[in-house]
Every structure is written in C-alpha cells, then in structure tokens.
Image (tube, rainbow, N blue to C red; front, side, top):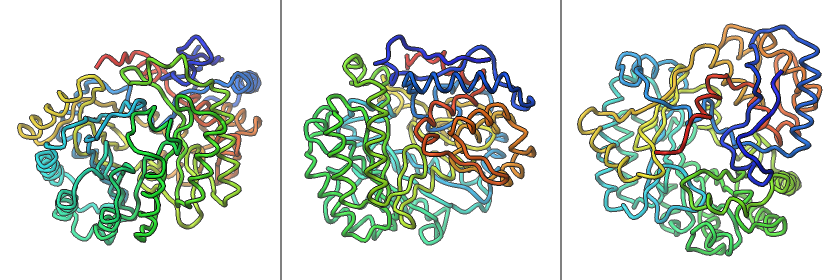
Length: 481
C-alpha cells in the first residue's frame, strides 16, 4: 500500500512541492478490488486531508517536468501520424512569450523587453504553421488560443497578421471554431483594443488579473492599479465580448483572508462569464522562490478556497473544475476542456507544447536562459521548419491514467470504453471505491463526477493515478535549465 509523501519538510512549504507521491509501489491498473487496500487508502486519504497536504496544480498529465529528449520528436512519420489521431478534435495554440515584465510568481516561458522582435516572431510562426499544415490533412479547427506571455501586447496590425496566417491554412475558421481566445494583461486593454478583439473574431479573453489589491499587485511586479483592472473588465464587457474569463491567484505574498475575500467579491460584482481561481505554485528561478518561507500555509490556501467557493456559489456561478467557475450557458474554457478529453492541440511558437494522444512535445523551455531559447526557436524554424526539442510518449496504459488524472470531475464511462477499449469500472477499482466511500467521487453506470469535496482535493487525489515512471521523471527534474 502506498503512503503519502512530499518532497518538502515543513507545512508552510507544501505549496512549493512539484510532486506528491503515494510511494511504495505503483497501483495495478486492472487489479480486482482489495478491501484491505481500500481500507488503508481511505485512512491515508483522511490523514492527508487532515494534514492539509496541498500539491501543485495538475494542469496536464504527464506534467512538463517529465519531458526529456526523445527519438520520436525528430521522427517525421511518427509526428505526422500523431497529429492525425483525433481528426474531429484538432486545436491550435500559439505562444507569444512577450511581456512588459516577468511577474514574481511566473515560471512560464516568457521574455521581457523584446517587443522589437514581434514582427520577426510572427514570420517564424507563419513558417512553422506552413511546415505543419502539410501534415494535417483536411482537419478543421475546433479552437484557437493565443497564449503567453502577453499576446495582447501585439498591436492591431500584428494581431491581424496572426489570424490572417491561420486563415491561409484553415479558411473560414473564425466562423466555424467553437472558441477563439486571447490572453490579455489589464494594462494592455483600452477602448480601441477591446473593440478590435471583437472585430477580429475573438470570442473569449483570458484576463490575468491575479488580485484586486494594489499592494498585492505591486508585490508581484505589476505597475498598474486594481482600478485599471476593473476598467479593463468594463471595457471588454461593453465591447460585446461573448466570454470574459478572469483569473485570480490564491496565496500571493501578503494576501490575507480579508484581502482575498475583497478581491473575489469585487470581481464577481463585474460578472465575468468565467472565473478561474488558481492556487499559487512557487518554482525555483522565480522571484517568489526566495520568499517561500513567508508564504501562507496550505491550510489557509484551503480556507481561502472555501471563501471563494461560497462567494461564487452565492452569485450563481457553477463549478466546472477545481479552479473554474462559470455563469451557466455563458462561461466556458473550451480548449482546456478538449485538451483534458484527449484532443490534439498543435502548439506553435517558442516554448509551446503540443499534445496528441500518443506523444506530448515542446518547443524548448528555460526559466533561466529565456533569450537563448527564443534565439534557438528562430534558428530552428529557419533550418528545420520546426523547433521540437523534448517530450514524452504515452502508451495505451498512460493514456488511461491520463483520463483518470484529468477527467474524474466529469467522465462519461461509455465514451471512456469507446476510447480505451476497457470499461471504466475495470480500472483502479480499489482506488475508485475508496474515493467514492470518502465522499470524493460520485460513480454511476455512465457518469462519474467529483463532489464538492472532490473538487477541493482534486490535485491531491489525482496523483493516485500517476505511473511510477512519471513520478520518477518528475522527481528527477532539477530546474537547472
């Protein structure tokens, strides 16, 4: 039986963990129910919850810390076949690493002060898309996502060029896509930009607010006020945008329960269609890392989750995942929904990741030598047409694990069997029984979903389904690049 451990020594540092582990051995996917194991696991779940163990947010599986150099990444035939695995669920992600400043908590691939390279970068994106277009057959786009970084830093002409480049290879995509999204920083939004987004065909804007407290904004390196954030929301709402998604971070340095409650309350008063509440994760090579001993405890993170949950529920929001709440019939986050369901997402740009059922790969990454990675991207596109650097392959069993890690909040057992060739109830039966008996899961013949408790502790329980291989790769990652 695997007990729960973490790569940390003090409670205050729980939120810094890059992994949580149920160690002794790997759970057998298809072992019959073992009542002793069920009883032991229930005890360990209760103990972990009572101890306020809070692992990192599980955005995807396998996590990017598992990526390594991989022969398949350079195998043109393998890549071509992988990109055709979900012909009715193909999506495009374009990464724009440009930012005015790098926020204190950020360990994404971004660069600051390099806006003079944007036009050259768009040329490289166009060349990369042309390279991949030859491998995509007649697939149509379901979603387009311009992420970063701060893609809203691009001017109108540059944004028009980006979408026109996509139009060359996917004619009419603006009319047929389920969603076209752009990430935005509040200080890049004015009346003209908000109106232009709508004219361009953007249907969702992800606005990275993070907090509505001036002192907390200053603490993460932002040079604008909370009033500017609220004004950006107003401008986007007034533009007629279909879906405004606003992000907040739970756990910022100096954040209190009172300041958190004020931020959440101010935000929901503006009625964004989608609200995402992310727990802080602190990584090495970020500005926050040196202040990690001063961060609030995991217990307070969970307490503040409860505060936000109550406010959002009272204002009519419905919880979709552990971090996402929506106004019914209006809010959504389509690309990540499709991603978790196993869709193919082709990632373009420096640092971008591509996801296909059998392989995930990436166009380089570094939180220490960012400019070098950007330069390598330009060189690789010029020389090879692509910039694939590392990744991880997923066999059929890892694909089943991925489904359990990412989709227990809302899983259709009939679709699961159609995709994987096995019944849901034949996989991890002891673990599923334990989670059900602990009030974390509701399991019916055709439907599985988290309870409210399940959403709250999703990042903890999802790691029950990580493979030994993935856990070892994650633990070995040293953040040296």
